[in-house]
Length: 207
Image 1 (tube, helix red, strand yellow):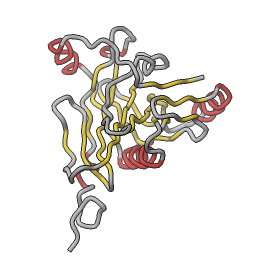
Image 2 (cartoon, rainbow, N blue to C red; image 1 turned 90 degrees about the vertical axis):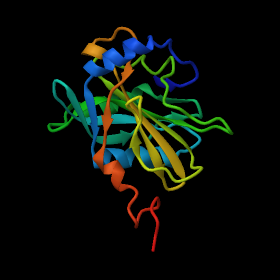
Image 3 (tube, helix red, strand yellow; image 1 turned 60 degrees about the vertical axis):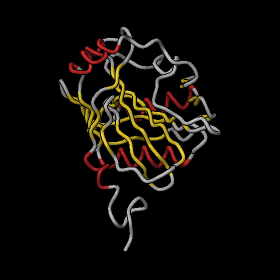
Image 4 (spheres, one colour; image 1 turned 90 degrees about the horizontal axis):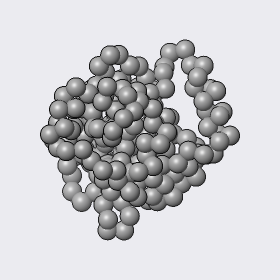
């Protein structure tokens, strides 16, 4: 049974080491369909975690995420989400035969609980099923306090508001595509996100 949890964070490497590794890390690009799916699946089960797989392409120094497919049978709680062995086997069989897309990794959300706002830090169990060349995306979803434009943060993640929520999205990878040490935040890009503030959107101003 696959399980994701955000209750315990791993020991972080020194800041200078993180900065040096990030310069060597691959860049992660989110397509329009992938971003929409991340936002919708996180909001749909808000106050519980969503969980799904990432499909797309990989080059030597870039990961292009085209689709984010939610696991519909996942057992959800506020701080963890599980996928049964049977569901995992079926999903692996179906995705393994896709001719166009590769499985790049997985994603899950961290929802706000009470007054405690969610963040994109990895939990101790989040890397158990993560392979050395995987990307793992975490979406922190919180109540929106005020309208905020989408932006690239100093830690290489991205954040902004849409509808009634504030989202932070981070993409974790292992430096050198080898499973040793802790995953780091890779530079994350999504040009489509900056169009979410258009006049006709739930985030934009009308009239």
